[in-house]
Image (tube, rainbow over all chains, first blue to last red; front, side, top):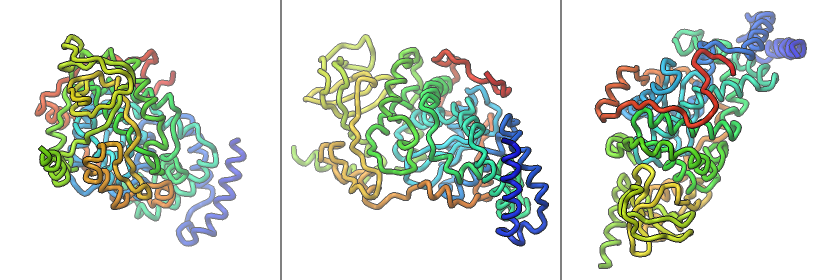
Length: 289
Length: 178
């Protein structure tokens, strides 16, 4: 396997020199091989720092295709709700960061390392802070369980080869690593993130069981944070009313909302004694419909 | 009496922020309609399976509904919601059965659908150039622990200790593999 990868990388290094011309003129093909080897090793185990860089790479790629919402008050509000929920998880100290993208498609994404993106389309469909907390808690649970990280780690070697390509292509964008974010994007792990994003990682479904698990953990995380745990159920009932058709939407990558509701009903009665808050007024103050 | 629903429709169209979807739902089993959202509340009626109701309000595990001239609370899990909302620009996007026609075309969903959706497709991901500036911008909105705690205190959100509702242990933050 490893030899095959090295061959791919060596071929890539040769063709890349031709493709990227000036940009790669000074890059030693041997260095690319070296990076490729590291990535193979990284496939076995990511440090927390690399996990975060991977998520940052994915997020930078996602934001390259979908603009951040311009309402800074909205961005801070979502960060406050999300961080409060995440503080009740098993990974409270990750650099949790939440972003609202200004697209109408209804979706939310969890990236390794604690970067979570929610679409304005989904946000506008919600009616209370507890529903937002429920949706974010589902994503926080994915990060806690490292669902996305494990899916990337078990990916095909061709992805890794692609990744090296994008990593080097990236150095153009990173602007020589002048900014902190630019520097992050120059790391091998961020390159993996950008590579898997281009391979369609965010439009591929996770295993159904992982979605059900994130739902079951999500209701508990929301309840721990003092929210009405039925917020997530309300979100799923809203999703159940949406007809398909949005290609990259939440319905194309998740089990049917009705199946998710049925799974939650099996465990939910245990939470009925925790009457959390819904906070619809505070939500409406910030989220314009 | 006729002017009332008309005014309501106008109000909903003018103030979409308050246009709480009059969601159409059906009971997914025979269930009791209660006078408030609690197990020990008085039972007003027993609704047979597939009774059409409109959602008025949500509260914990209970949902306030109206239907057949009655109003009361049923268990949230005892409702099913038909897929009636179009989101894609190609769909035409009237709300149809969702609002029984009264508010059709006057709500947020319909507006979005007729305007056309600013979507996010697999192609967008494939063609995206990583945006370091946007990443930095997003990270600038980060809230620290103290900030999150102060935000929770403002709304009197308090932490509760609850175990997960499943057998599998949650992976610890140390990165240990099961």
